[in-house]
Image (tube, rainbow, N blue to C red; front, side):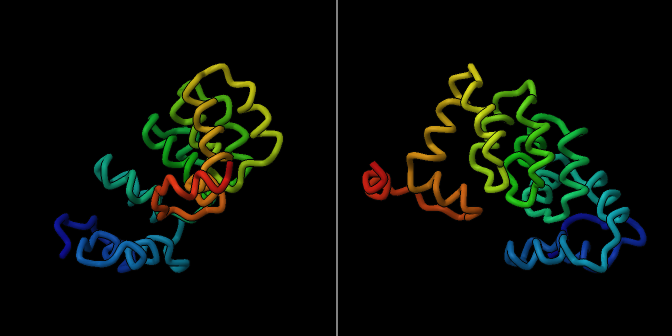
Length: 163
């Protein structure tokens, strides 16, 4: 059921994204419909409440829009972009210099983080970034997240296998 009034002229796929009764994968497919122009998706993202925009950004597979939000979004939105496995490596390279440690730490879990970006993260003096790098490479969940899996169950026994 759609609980918000969609903006006038909204493509049908984006109206489907607003339907909370759909499964998340169906909503993601609607959001990333190739027939929806980037300009319409951009306007749609701007029209959403901050919470809805964060959900949409976490499902977004369009590199140009992720790059745009990495440059203009608030800290919470940049955190989501840094974690999104569809964010291009060039965007992650820029985000490694983000002033917010919460943003930088998510780069450790992104499968598109290239070795030079990870090397720069290793030099980050913030303890939360250091902990994120340790988690990303020393835990089962971290390995799964680095592989792009975004539905990971955290199991301590699996972490022991990695040690």
